[in-house]
Length: 593
Image (tube, rainbow, N blue to C red):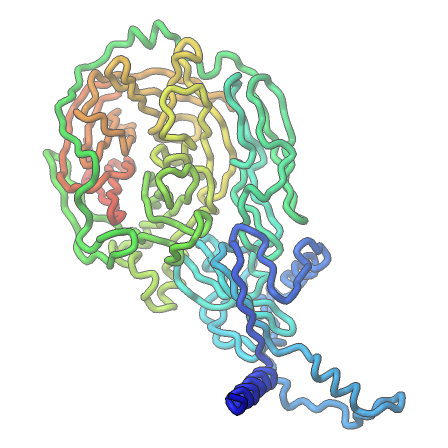
């Protein structure tokens, strides 16, 4: 036993000695991605603005260099450089002090592991390297600017003598290491203004205005950790507030205004109740749970790429496969949180200027998620997006430039979407609410970076608050016009509303009404859009689609018997786009009439 202990001790000494001579030090750390993730090396600079300012200065000084943000310092091998030949201390002491200094010499690199976290890319270009070994970066694999609008995650930090490098995953794929200065650090992204409709029964939750907040490492932190000067704002009386947001050294301010009008959002009860309903139907059978899927999709954790397109026909409507979407745009991690996870549940879609924008939730009970945009002008192959993890790195670098992923933002249930030339719109609603006096948030999102640009709240009350319309489905046609649909279960009909914006005020107008429930089991609407050319609404229930005139006239219906849920529909360029779930598959029609 003593001999074994002695051998074990000698072996341990040899291993430690080898690690020290190699200049490597590995420290595993488990950290919650929603908390302040401090490295194990007693780095207490989280709130140190001097370090943050220094890092920002370095980024500005080096970002224009040939290596895109890197200097050559980490690439130089100094192992053969000659030091002073006289090691004698000028004060007359021996070499013991020099030996002590060598023992305390900083290793060439320190590796720290983390739980998976989400990062935000900044505006400067930095090289992404394949690896960092012995304090030196090796082999450039990408330009970081290509990933500016991608979903970026990290789980490892390597600190060299001069730099801090993070291992990054882009849209779920491991890519390499990038300088920490690449990230947007100590930032809170919020819109300049929020405009709220007067409502005695509603309070605005101010953290809904946050697109993201990052710490000193560029890691996205939970919005709950951001300090706000006001948690909520009552919408009872007109007033303006400057709401301040702070986290560490990061600061931001949003101007929040409760609008003055007492008539906004009010619909005349007599006009609404006397509006003629067009004949409808209750006859169509809709299943309660889906029973189908694409060929190679088994579950959210078990699937493989699809290799065949579909052609679905019903009556005079034919849909063909346009684009299969990735199930996830994040690292597969069963322990991940909602900030980290992009997917797997598609809820809505809008098509604009050749881009398809989908809303994704990680759980159906959430009202926050991600908007993902695909440039179908460039991504013309219907299958390639399924191969982000296995396509060649060079192809990946070019491909993801045509995909944008929003931060984790409020999007409601995701089935009320639309677009204008510059913006995407989502109605941040709660699909579990029915008859409520709550206002609804209309979130305007920039197409350029998929961050929140502005928020309005709106309401539709028929006569008074006791007869409210809370919309689960809607479509924005432009920056000033929106259509919504409301299922009036008391009167057994569907209503179609137009909301028009004047200034910041939104005014509702009932434009159509259809008797009946369309389906015989009260299945919810899962897709709603409007064709402005032919003045037709389209409603989707599971795999059923109904075409309805603007006044509520039922014109046609289509049944596709796929067993897959329709999760959003959109009209663009005279064509109908339909997004199916289980695996997300966008289909497009020929010209509609």
